[in-house]
Amino acid sequence: MIPKSQIVNLPVYEPGKPIDDVKRELGLEEVIKLASNENPFGCSPKVKEAIVSQLDNLPIYPDGACLELRAALASFLQVKPDELVFGNGSDEIVMLIARAYLQQGTNTVMAAPTFSVYKTNAVIEGAEAIEVPCIDGAHDLDGMLARVDENTRVIWVCNPNNPTGKMIGEQELVRFLDRVPSHVLVVLDEAYAEYVKSDAFPNSIRLLESYDNLIILRTFSKIYGIAALRVGYGIAKANVIDKLDRVREPFNVNLLAQKAALAALSDQKFVEECKRANAEGLQQVYAGLDEMGVSYYRSETNFVFLMPERNTREIFNEMLQLGVIVRAFPGAVRITIGSRQQNETMLEALRQVLVPARQ
Ligand SMILES: *Cc1c(COP(=O)(O)O)cnc(C)c1O
Image 1: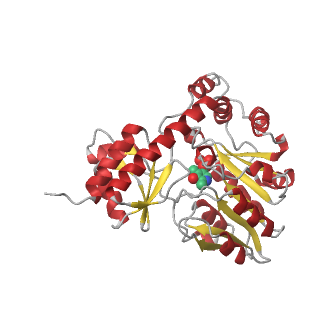
Image 2: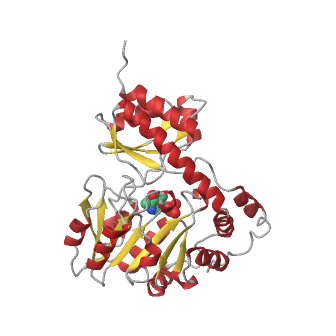
Image 3: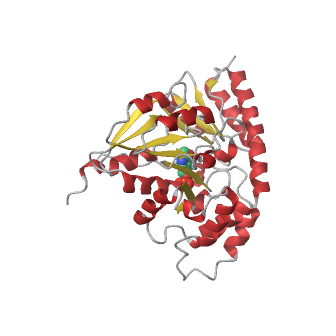
């Protein structure tokens, strides 16, 4: 058999270890996972009710157009229903964008480090992935623009950036959008938008009025707390949405996911509460890190990016032994903000790993 040549050496995505496996392997009672930026407070109680109410409808295909969710979200965001596309997580929208816009002979520009799914999908489509190093954890937008040529089809801007947590402000974004050629689609991935506290965060939905080549990605996996159900969405002019709809599977978002997202959206009090608790958690974690003298970036998200002066693979392994799962990057560790108690446990584990015993 002859698979596509570009996928043969593609790294297989390594998901975070499931908590129960880690508990069993290490014989630990308590393990906390702060590796995937999930919501430590779960999701709105309305979600459970919505799912239970649908249990008699499982033999029927879901609404392939997500009409009810579409109407509710369009009204919430103040956009037109045909300016939305839904996906099995925003991961799927990334895949749809790559499918619709990338192929052999084209290229696509992204930051490094950034969300790894952009590159994977670009490679699968045979496009060249051009990675432009971040400067102090922030996108080098000028550097990215400098790499755009007539073969560029898509530029990925993750705002705030995963894994660094850093944000691009509205002025800087507008200056960038003004200079991107109109043949290039700009993907603004705002998976963490609901966590951002800064007043400078772009009102990206309003920017759609001025830029036809812009798509915004958001998700129900992070602050809304329903990552297991897989619902994400894109917001763009109908012309872009139309292209993604042509490459989309007809029933890509399942029934329970649609109803759960609708219920989650209706509970903005829950979202506000999580945002507030996360801001407190960030302060708690900053204080602990300052005390340990670890360097890190200030974050606009629900995770922090630390740059410890030790091998980060070792830090990962040693924290795992202590029952705390984090995410290691070359030279850095990304840790999700948990509940107050989880943050305390995490800081204690990090202290044990980083601060040499004084005896
Ligand atoms: C978590 C995350 C997503 C993916 O979210 P899903 O909707 O669960 O697929 C997309 N982009 C970024 C930057 C993320 O961190």
